[in-house]
Image: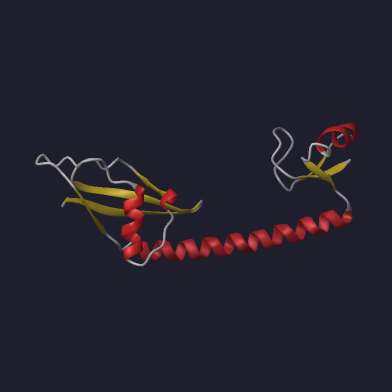
Length: 147
């Protein structure tokens, strides 16, 4: 019996895979639990079309991310923070502040996609990692200055 998986199933396959299973396993477990659909010819055609459309969308998202990464490589940010005399800042610089600084320069980046190699806790220069796409990553240098 052939079924189309709706989600990843350990030791069986990934989402949108067409797998062959024993009839009892498919009829009594996979289909009733909503983990799979019967692989009829019409369901296979629908699956092929969905995969083609998803692939087109992913290519467009990756292309947009690559263009944004090319623009962001030449940027250097300056983040102001309240700091003591020793250079230690009160609190820390976080991804929200980096996202706002990028927004003021005209780049809209989701704050959840920003990470740091080392947490900025003192005045100095640091690097922020932007994960724009699973295959597109860019590093942006930024400087923390005392206000």
